[in-house]
Amino acid sequence: MAPEENDALVFTDLTLGYNSHPAVHHLSGRLKKGSLTAIIGANGSGKSTLMKAMIGMLRPMSGSVTRAPDQTIAYLAQQTELDRHFPARVVDLVSLGLWNTRGLLGRHRREDKARVQKAIDTVGLSGFEHRVLDTLSGGQLQRALFARVLVQDAQLILLDEPFNAIDTRTLTDLIVLIGKWHREGRTIAVVVHDHELVRAHFPQSLLLARELIAWGDTAEVLSAGNLDRASHFRETWDESAPWCDLDVAGLPDLDGQDAERHRA
Amino acid sequence: MIDAIYGFAIAPFVEFTFMQRALAGALMLSISASPVGVFLMLRRMSLTGDAMSHAILPGVAVGFLLFGLDLVPMTVGGLIAGLIVAFGAGAISRLTSQREDASLAAFHLISLALGVLIVSMRGSSIDLMHVLFGSVLGLTDEAITVIAVIVVTSLVAMSTFWRALVAECLDPLFLRSVSRLGPAVHFLFLGVVVLNLVGGFLALGTLLSVGLMMLPAAAARFWTSRVETMALTAIAIAAASSISGLLLSYHAALPAGPAIVLSAGAVYVVSLAFGTTGILNSHTTKGQHRTA
Image 1 (cartoon, one colour):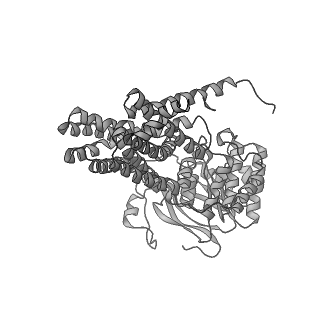
Image 2 (cartoon, one colour):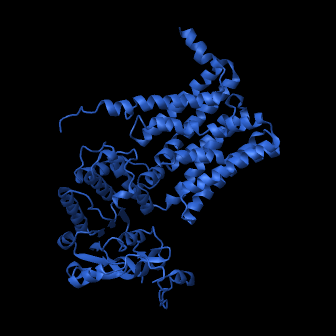
């Protein structure tokens, strides 16, 4: 499936995984431009794996992810992926976001520095510009990372568990920021665990349990039936599982080699 | 007084060409190797430099076996052996479940034994000492030229990819999301490490070349909390250690390589004790605090 005019990302029979075991199995669907989607599911249900495939970091075992050309990416990994002991200040971290416009070699100009400062002010970290990263609280670090997303100024914003271990005041501020991005017409997908938060702030939801359980309006996705189905998935890898029954007709992305590695 | 200082610190470098060459070689290496050491340290690969310095030995030894104590074949051999080990260890960690440190440990032990074996097949133990510990006071013009080429290459690579190196250390997934440079930068960096170790081998030998790389970096960590200033501080410490080591060697008739590395070691110990994040400062201010 090629992206149509309103599609930011298109998943076509996407299977992702590690060592021939699928973490996300036969996912198909379209992420609409300008949508605000919560990606939900238990630990091990494939949420982070799906995010990594969205940014092109993880190669699909089969199927494909296609991104519309105008959808530039800003991706925020889980905080644990960051080396907090690296000697850098808040302003250095936020300036990394300039990569989207200046790349590896482009000089950071005066207007870039102003943009970085404005982002730091927007997330409420004025005065923290020269603080070293390992002196920040979890919430302050998350604000700084959101400032970096602001600087990246991307059309497609992907946030992996941005609300872990932060206080309610920071949470409120970050939700406001996400709402602002939504109103600006950006496409946003966020991995979230708290269902109340999803119901209150995310119009769309994608429920995963190593396969797609439901995707659509949040009220329908978070029905009791769907949540019950999602809670009964197998988290362990079954070494004796039979090879996945493949229906490869009409899927040009699948070659024979991929098909063999593909397991149910 | 001024005469005394001149006589002690300046005259040796003015009067003797071998001291000038030694100074030029050591200062050039200080400028390029110590920022590399800073990144090795920040990537928690401090001992990788050590392992890699052993890895270049068999290449140097093969050059020595075939051409004797001739600089160019030994340098080229060391470069090839170092690159094979660096890229081999990196590739193994990506192709199998073995981590890079484990495969590197295996490679460098094999390399070290192989290197010593090859050198001893031909040379005397004096030759072996020369290869292992270098001869900064015996640097030829040819050696200075080779070091200069290595230093320029390394500096160009480091400054071109600086932003990617920082991002790769600080937030590797961010780099993966904005650029395809991530894995390439890792291998490029390993290549720069090998390059600097080979340059260092010419002056300090395979075993000590890593000293000028890691000790100033480890010392600089105690003084600053920004990577840019850390790299500059490390360069300054390495340069000061080079000068002090050469002077010590000249006046006290000590071997120059160890004198340089020990000078850097002394700066490390002082930094550990008195640096802004050293032992004294992080423990004596306990209890004193400002109002919230």
